[in-house]
Amino acid sequence: MAPSSSQDAAAVFDPLRQRLVRVAYRMLGSVADAEDVLQDAFLRWLDVDRNVVHEPEAFLRRVVTRLCLDRLKSVRRGRETYVGTWLPEPIVESAEDEIDDVTLPLLMALERLSPLERAAFLLHDVFGLGFEEVATTIGREPAACRQLASRARGHVRADRPRYPVPRERGLTIAEAFFAASRDGNMERLRALLAADVTLYADGGGKAPARKAPAAGLNDVLRLFTTFASVYAVSRSRLVRYGFINGLPGFITIERGDILQTTALEIEHEGVVAIYVVRNPEKLKHMADTVH
Image (tube, rainbow, N blue to C red; front, side, top):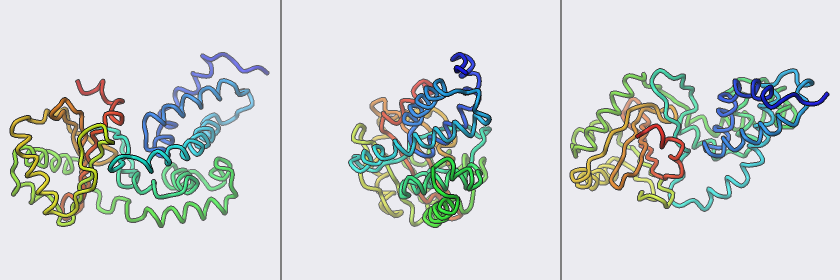
């Protein structure tokens, strides 16, 4: 039987789009690449005989995952030549949104996995699929998928949230961090930071950003002491606070009209990592929401 109209295809596809985007984004770490995969998946959905597809979501999840596995090869090659520190494209959520435990540090840890390890871990540990379905999705035996997920779990265990900070507490710390760092109050900033704090900045060679991470309390404080003279002349314009890839943080407009996200990884001892994204290519999907 011939496939039905594109409107019928969209009527099934569109309600699943958000869940499929989550799969693609977590596989690729890129909003733009995830959207491209969704476009390709929809074209394949148009071409298939949808009358014989009994579980559209499972079918489309398989299509999306396989497209991501194909794309990961070229994506990884591009990251090998990336200028400076590579960070995932920021996804900003409000305190009311549902936030899972795939936070920014875990997304970065996923970069160390092979594509199949990444797929098995995400599908089973994050999205809750049984290994039979994972096996069907990635074209491996269930036992092999169990091994892939177990191996991945060992690699990323240290990067999963250990002491999740309550959302309101996280936003309070983000507000205090913004105020202290922009006012040049180094003593107040020092009190917020852990001794082993690290700052990562992603400019991608397209916006000014430190290429190597600043590691340790003294190095990070020296960096913000340098920034203080810049902020004194050109104040950051706060757009809003929110959760950036699951971490509390904020969006600002910086000198030169540069859009920037800052995310804070917080443990009991204070802010242990600061993630700053300034690469305009990674922030294009946010441009309409900040002006």
